[in-house]
Length: 513
View 1 (cartoon, helix red, strand yellow):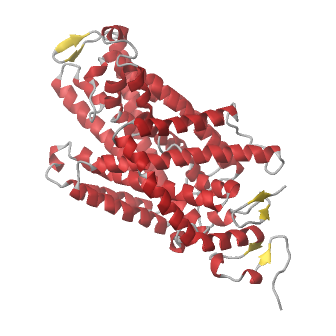
View 2 (cartoon, one colour):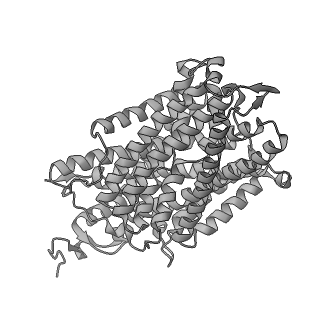
View 3 (spheres, helix red, strand yellow):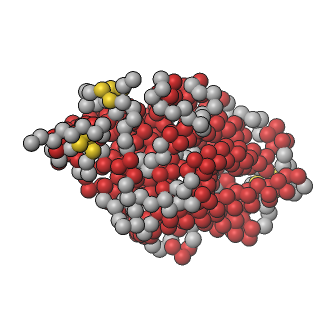
């Protein structure tokens, strides 16, 4: 059984993509991957963004987080199938190349780069905003703080993968510790009916708050549905575990354990936190741009408690932003390396340090982030919103690609072209199709969310033609490398070597003379 690819010739599905992994070191430990999986599912979307969403949707936000969390888990399980099929630092971009060919991989790769390039702008902007919370930093311009954050995280990423892993471990640990502390305190406050205040008045905690403030869906169904698009992006970076798999020890044991643990964390940390927040204060007490956790601690009646809690939570969201920036530089460096090895990105993005760090790709992402620093200089108030909405398109593309590749892997397994996955997405292919439908619905919700969401979808009018032009500029090199990879061996850069001088993998010598 053969499949067709972009070169126009038949090929077997048993392509050798091992060249993509050359130079990498398995420097990530199981404990680090576990925390990367957790940290990828917990970020500023919960610590900061949940306040505005609670105000919009009310207690129904917990249901929205639960629904989005279920689909996030499906995406992770689908990714788990692919990782156990073939661990790769190129992650779903490499799988797209294997299952759908070069065009698909090219588009998926550059959309993913766009996602993280824009997200890195969001993260550096967020770091600067969070630092301005403390009076010691208010005099420093926003662009300078953003630049310092980039330089510090970039330096850590350039050393070795184990430095990245250790940073992510501690960043994730801080986030988890903060949430556990909140859950314990909130439960104590709820069980013992300790008083809280809002607007200078005492408030009864518990389900009576829901009854007194419009119930589960106080503002109607539409706001609760529209908020889905923001909730989905709170789970951005869950796919990082796939990228990390290529540099992790004992992948077959660690990956399933890490992925399965995420669904429990989503249920407890996201759904549990939102339910408790809505039972402790009226949903109208929470505000956009302010951490809902700070809002709660400020309601305990002691102003000093609110000040201390504010500083603690600001530190937590600061680490969440730094964690995301760290992850973005890590993942794009690996993605660009995979793309460069196959011709979709410039050849120099394949350069690696002796420590196994694809530094060229990381530096390219950092260069784009510097453009974000410029945004902070010229339009500091709009920088966050502009970058965040463009990044959302890349996230949807990445998750959709993962599901499509998982579906193709199952198809190949049934045809005997690939090994049956030992770690499966439950309920597939039904859950696969449901996840694709869910992602499509998010795009529709973005489109009708005027003006920001509408303009974000409209930006595809610019992005798609740019991808098409880029493809035709790179096409010859991409297809030369693909044809050679599928038929003959040879060191990279294959695209500048004479195919007639190579040796086919089937042992046939094509050399003349």
